Amino acid sequence: MDMYLETERLTLRRFTAADADLLIELDSDPAVMRFLTGGAPTAPEVIRESHLPGIIAGYERWRGDLGLFAAHEKDGGAFIGWFCLRPERQGPLDEAELGYRLRQAAWGRGYATEVSRALLSKAFTELGLRMVWAETMTVNHGSRNVMEKLAMTLADTIPTPPDMMTVEGSEHGGVRYEITKEQWEQR
Image (cartoon, rainbow, N blue to C red; front, side, top):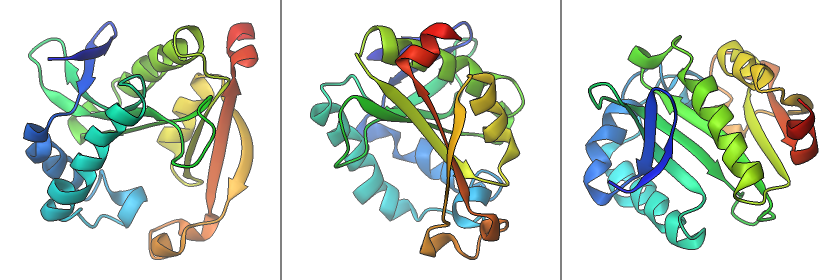
């Protein structure tokens, strides 16, 4: 296991080609997908043929420093979901998106905040990033609370993407939070 990051309760590692079933199970839970697709699952062949190969290619693109990483509980090894720290495809390399998708069993346990704090630390102390941002739907109060706990500031409102107009709460659009290295150092 190629470990990327370790926190008090979790380890993060790179995904491998053998991990398709973990992602398929995660994306098949309507509650997990609520603010992403309105609850519709991601088709298994899309995960196998597009998403997972794209995740793995990202490690090569960003020398393994950035990307999407599988998260497991240290106690028992259960897969709880994924976290990402990665630049936009055509965006500046000193800015990265922070994101996560967690199984329902992992909700409400502080994992998103715990790992996101560790990722911000890595971003600003080891990876030389200038700014980290995160986006979510305006009505996704759970994710917004995590961003606020991380001392990220509300930077902008964003329109709902056309493919998400049928998602509950989409009429309220989305929000973008940001934190710069300077803000992180002063928190």
